[in-house]
Image 1 (spheres, rainbow, N blue to C red):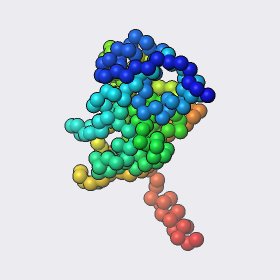
Image 2 (cartoon, rainbow, N blue to C red; image 1 turned 120 degrees about the horizontal axis):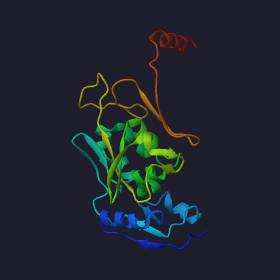
Image 3 (spheres, rainbow, N blue to C red; image 1 turned 30 degrees about the horizontal axis):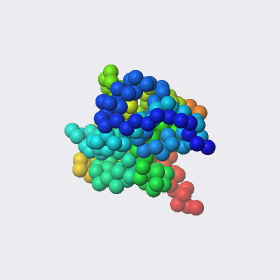
Image 4 (cartoon, rainbow, N blue to C red; image 1 turned 135 degrees about the horizontal axis):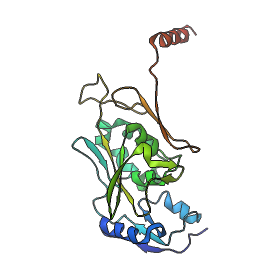
Length: 232
């Protein structure tokens, strides 16, 4: 099946893209890496009148740390996260998640923000951002707002983004687990470097993503379990 007919526009600045979205709203779809949107176009599950290609806008592929915050730009690709020395050294949870995203072709083209905006329940980055307590930055020509990752997803394929908004980045402040000296790696895949009780993000297809606190296990119960295991 082929996509339905649409107009194509490649703006040269973010402001131009936001102006177009402000005028066209639901009639337009933003294209970043295309790994989520293009299959929907082929199946005609999405039929926009205008395709807005963000790929030619310079400076949107940032993956940097500023004032203790990790900044992920709207064109930062899964491959960039996979190869980032900054993530491996200071944000190991994201570094561990990046190679698990789909396959090399998708990682080479797909973007982190595009995956989040698509809100596929089987996607990887939504649960990672919820677990890390990230903030997502949405922008329109009227201004900018910040949405906590745990509040961003309304359900499968639906988010808090308005038709005239773009997800222009994610922010994540570096945090440290109690007892881990600053400068050493804290956390890993499935373990988030935060003070206090462990926090686990979960995304399910039938319900809104939610944040759950794991209760600390009692020493005596853990000890009995270990002895029983060793006796087997």
